[in-house]
Image (cartoon, rainbow, N blue to C red; front, side):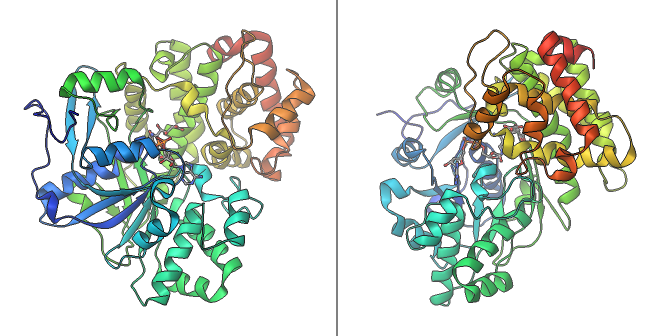
Length: 487
Ligand code: NAI
Ligand code: CS2
């Protein structure tokens, strides 16, 4: 079969120019999804072509994605990234991946043994917000999470990322091997701190001595990661096949922009990703908050209100002046004032760049995709800024409208009466609350009372209840397009 590994690709495709056979799996990555392929693996690819080093990546999918791992193996772990600008596309063949595993294909022990190999220095993750098994509102381990319960009962046969990491660290400690760095690359506020507290709390429940060893020996740098990478579709895969002259089931399309800010806190060494444009800094938290609130917060706003308004993609919402203006105002009036950035940060230029990125018509980023997992995303994208405005007594109507949009969306029925396929770990619970109230404003305080999403200081605040109720009422009476236009 013709693959990217055995085909003569067009000369326009940028190929790895380093010795792939010299690479070792010094990074193990959990979550070979869309994002990692176009971000960390691509940065590593570029770093390898600029340095004489051996930092290869072993890819692991713990949930689903068996087909991707099998396909990757069938093409010598090479795959394509298509960077699609508004007018042109750059195609790169990525060579930084050396190996791949899946517990359903290779067995749990093989995965644990890989994580325990002496040369493994970094375990990185893009496992989605829910992968941390943490309470979304507090970031603390959710002891009632089904995966946590299962892994605590049977730690040598883990299912969750936490279970794998803790068991692998246990093996390393017993074998007197050095620890590794755990690097979260998910859109989670203070992602390193959330990863650390989830791992530490999990280890505490299992073995307090192991917990102490982890606390002393393992580091959990925070990272701010950014690149818009929509899920692959038949259409993007066909387009990539046309560009490279063969099928690539692992191919992925993304925007040209990319950013990676990393806390320089690695316990067993790290690649010089800075030569590929990443920034190592002491404190990532301000950058994370800026990105989560301004980019992701307005993304969620556009996702819920866009989906309800009949817009399938983010770029479609940008063709509606009301949405475009509201997204910019959401960034500048609702989110930017709540940030505490290093001197010289120009948030208005950042917002302008974000609108430009959202407008890219080549990128088909579904509002439905971004609307997914809202119970996990909303607290970190809106909660902090909501608290800021309550403290200052300032206007937060964009945040209230976004939250009302989410509440209207999780009802599971759109403005035309069609069913919405709501994907969320709390979908059943949310649906039950919505069903009890119907499309009635009484659902607002009921959903605001879900403490895993809205801590009491927000969910029980009369100003929040009023503002979200009035936005929800407007959505019911006038619909999303008119509600957004009136903002
Ligand atoms: P995806 O759906 O393509 O991949 C999700 C990955 O997470 C898969 O590899 C899957 O195996 C793994 N996963 C899912 N549930 C898990 C669980 N409970 N435990 C362990 N692993 C689990 O999604 P994509 O686009 O790769 O995004 C993944 C994450 O990357 C996002 O949730 C976000 O936090 C972050 N991210 C995504 C960006 C994007 O534009 N796609 C940009 C910036 C960050
Ligand atoms: C999006 C993000 O799916 C979502 O929730 O808001 O994945 C977004 O595309 C990235 O964070 C951009 O870096």
